[in-house]
Length: 214
Image (tube, rainbow, N blue to C red; front, side, top):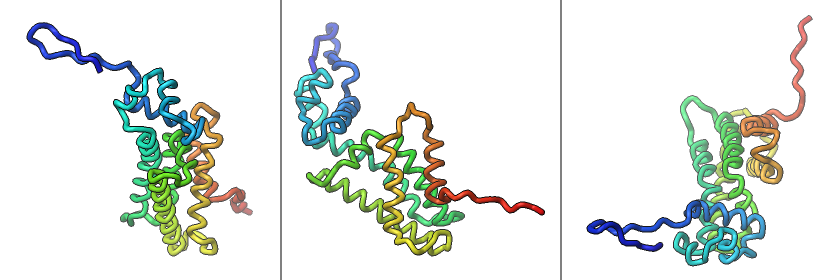
């Protein structure tokens, strides 16, 4: 950043950097590159060329590639972690089944809102401390959801012949599959997809005929 002299007697002015290349813009570009090329195959030089900046200009905002990865994975996980933590707490006037259903619906909303970083999260394999920490957070979320499933089974709201941990993985597996095909400008809005995933997960595809009156 260049410092220029202001009017006599005034404080020096700081020349602002190139518009649109703040830390948030750098992170968005990094996530796009990580998803397109792969994290390991992306260099800081690649990111600099993508943004039309020098590497020192990027290092003014971040320490390096691993910091960008950590920020991206936090973006993918923070809201879902908060939603699952809230649902895990017993709340007056709500059942475990209601909270489970609500958190599955919320997980769709979070994925859609953070689709690029969630896509990146689903590709990490634990090759660094940052990736291992993210995988540990994913396991925590799976465990809390499994506990919520077990509570709903104990209430009698869910069938008990499928292990709760398996149910948790299947539920998140269905939600996470959205990264492969969902597009914000596509045929379905977020609410429609969230409603459909929740309905299929908890009500199934079977048609329930209403009893006919004589």
